[in-house]
Amino acid sequence: MLTFAPNDALDQGLIMRFFWLFSSFEGALKKAGFLLTDGEGNPSADWDGFYNCYQLNFSRRGDGSFPRAMSYLARNPPQRQIVVRDGPGADLALRWAPQGKRPRETDSQFAWRLVRTVRNSLFHGGKYPHGGTDTMVERDQVLLAHVVAILEKAVTFHPGMKAFIPHAA
Image 1 (tube, rainbow, N blue to C red):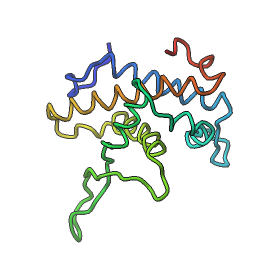
Image 2: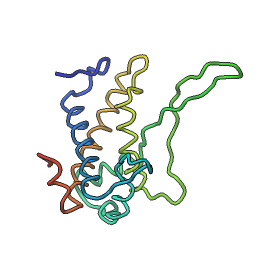
Image 3: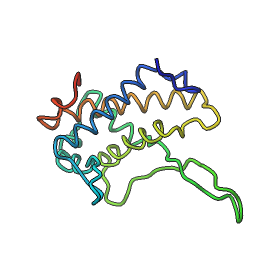
């Protein structure tokens, strides 16, 4: 089984579910026509286009894991990794910076954008440059679980998306 040292305290099943679901969802976006290109034929998923098409579904309130997860992300956004120079002539260094809503961005748009931030932070290995703390590990598990809940519900918004994701919830 693949392990992610030093994050061994993280639930490995949750990490695998997150990676599988995120990558499957992104592939399904492209197959369902939510597709962008850089002009050189390189495809990418149109996450914002999907949101714009189904924004009413994202904004609905109610009970359940989806609205709780969307609300949690909007209220407790993960930080993003940035590059800084700590003074003239200093080497570049990595730091964590708060992430806020953009002008005219709704809470649900913000939460949807943060789904990708969670993925980027975990996938690109920036979460534990010198080892994580118990608090970081606990928070990461909460973030991963919320993103999984969001993606599991979002796949149901488009009538054909589930067909492109085997074993989707």
